[in-house]
Image (cartoon, rainbow, N blue to C red):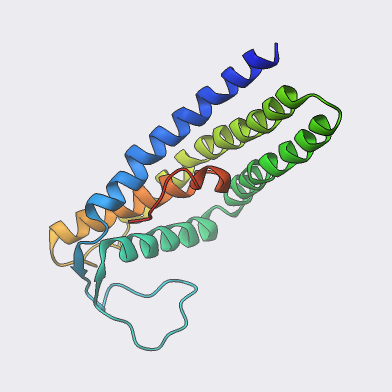
Length: 189
């Protein structure tokens, strides 16, 4: 029974790793180093950025991360209840692996190592599923921001703009992965 639970828990973990690699890490590795130039009259800094001087050039990965943060800040401003719901779901997902680890330690001490491993892997699988289920709303927020007037004209070169958009979506995919599973995917692009 425990082996079946362990096997069923590994399936969503493997699926999550494959999806985040394909749509996240792979895209960041392929496009993340591209040097892009923005229009500083349109491209305002991150909502959290406090620097006075901003560069007009940088990697598409950097601009993609900034675009993701701007889209999330815009989404938070327009739909605070939806953002709060998403954040609480992700918080529950983030505490699942440590919780499963604590239960696993107690089970291992009582002499049930297979059950301990199954509890930890099961909690990690739940965390991975929650991360993937919270992703569509974030991707929608990014796409909505891309179509807004605030983003239009931010990158004069259409290839730069496309690369930044791809990197923003890839960062969202990469961030949906629970921290414990990020160890299995090296590099951020």
